[in-house]
Image (tube, rainbow, N blue to C red; front, side, top):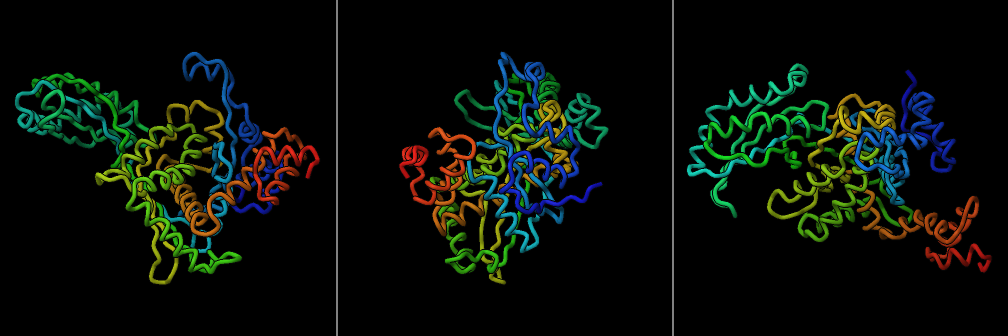
Length: 426
């Protein structure tokens, strides 16, 4: 097998074809996978089988973040995203992280919840007790719905029962099935199990079952990513590394106490995670919903990350959040580019995929805080956005880079200035 490395010199300066060849060579990808990642991987007939009323496909730029060292392993990470600076920022932060040994990530078992809502109860607490007494029966019934999953070591592992004494429709009981879904995202599995046990739940409680569906607050399926960077590695041309580290800690402090800042702070984390989720054919909406619900689990919305200065004056960051990703089933199995993306990373399990995505999210957060606490977020972002502005102004081919460089140098990244440069006024 080809020696895998995420360190590729001069990657940013290559044209797309050369970059693709370099990535494929570093990852040991075959020619078919390399072509698939080049685009137009989803034929209309396959797309037509995935969703309804298909008229075509919609493509996003697919980039690859380099330099990632996660739990001692090298990763080239595919990211499908339209926003400039995201891939570059993640790659640069991953390079800095190597100074402290890269990212360390761990995760819990892939436990998902199915919720079964029971209404019309005169004795909700009694109903709860009866359900708990029949736990073994309910677990066996749920597992009879997916014997293959059980054979792989997964399946329903337990139940929880909550009582809501009051609601707009009166008292209700909500039963949770706790299901180890292995390498699946798990929605279809847990939904099917909830449907399976619904009649038995009604029989036990004497109530009426309404909702039978998974929860996207996957708080039993959590990933924790951490990074430690020596202060010296953060030194810039104008700032000492210790100053940069302190600036990052101070910038994070506002997100820990203020939901207005936390919303933007966490959006920056998802700037890194969502592109990995999309590139691998996973449900980015489910990941977003789980992340933001988890951020508000204390009753107040706050940051998903914490940043500190440790005893050796190094910068230390931690991200903790749910990560319900899959490597089997759904679009992950259907979409050729999603499969190629998994092979690019040499991913072997859904748990590993979630850990990689979390490391990218932590890197992206560090990049944003570093920019905010030093040069400001706009300078670097707009410099990378300049190519889009040049294209909007009408630039093509070699003129794109020429115009982009000119408007960045003039500190005027605007369409008007780009048109002037293109017309030879500057």
